[in-house]
Image (cartoon, rainbow, N blue to C red; front, side):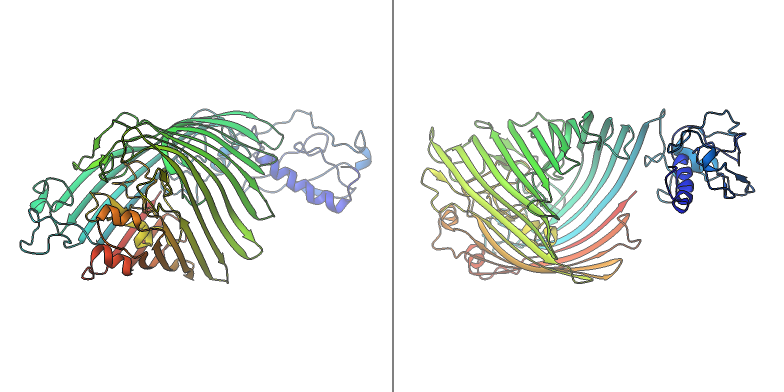
Length: 613
């Protein structure tokens, strides 16, 4: 340091003093000067005649003192260590409580302007054990309409058409999420040494339908003559322990292991597998975080029927997921993130029959002969996310192959061979971001051969093309006359013909889907965002639909999905988020073939408020 220029040296002195304040251990509470004249915390010298000040508390007078000339410092070219004893005055226990030492008190209700042990700002126990809680209230009101089936024995309108009923339903639901995190270690530059996480979710939901027999198999169960259902449930969405195994570089590249119920996403947009399931996951990074990896095994939990939350009171499903992926930052060019994935799904639920709590069959799917089955399928995938100059790009490509038990012929096997691809590009123009989206999920063009060519996900939750503001993605649209299965599952984009994605099995004999869409996000105000989306959907193949419905030609054109949403954040943070959206499906010829020309335009309205502490 003795070779630095005096001007630079003057800038380094106060910086070093500031950094010393952030180090654990005793701190100077008042101005102090050592007998040697060298500042105790640094040991620096200055040119003759220069002065500096020590640290001080607000309201304490500043004391100036003279540092020795540089030529008097021993061992020129090195920083002189301070070893002289000195009275340090009042102490604070550690660096976390510096602000308390100068009179700033803790406020548990204010996580922003004061230190808060409920948010991990100071140790909750000992010197390095921290606790953090995130409390979220997520409430929705959702009126909607789509074609629903009705039987002559259960309709509320005797004498009316006994195929398509009145499709109005209304959902009221609230989730209270309490995420509790207890961890140990200095997390400034590295992961915690230990982490324990527990996230219970309390759900209250109520659904009203205009037709009977929709909410429960028994049309007389529930209020208002079987047209109203109220339910509560407590699920566990996270319960795991995370152990930091080792650091492998001076920049804290690391290896860790996590055991328990934990979230996992197979790609950037949740196309294949995005869920919280029980498992073991090894993960870490290399080369200054340029490479990241995951090696994981999961065994799926049963889901509650009406809330979709994990039900830990039931046995684990005989459904196993083995996942391996690697992320490569700045590849193939800077600003773009590439990911390669291999996932194997082993489902051994043959000879298992499951009815949900509303008495509808879930496994096997009520399609063709309701034959139980196993399947072994492997997914090879590439996903990318980032930008090329001003163009933002997200993309995913998957190929699925394997075998499954035949859904029609006992003792026979069907070869699985299917593909999926999706991409979304956008560009920012100040406050406006227009985007274009495209997706293709292969369909099965012959349900009676020994091949299954329809792509299906494990547990999808696509954040794509409008996400849950889109009618097609959000709504669980039934395939009337198809045996109690859904054409499109809730929060899904693949027409997999499952009873539900929560409790059903993947189905690789499905019609597939093709989509192209445009949209835009407009930040009208810092607090207010307007989003608009138009998506055109068509089936990849309708041969299966014709066989299931025993119906003549069905056109591939499903229709146009249009949606509009407003998101308001009054404090420009995620603490209060209010969202209002509306979506409609303008049916095409294929929609009319399935539901009739008289079917009213399906729509959904979503009012959502999220409060976060």
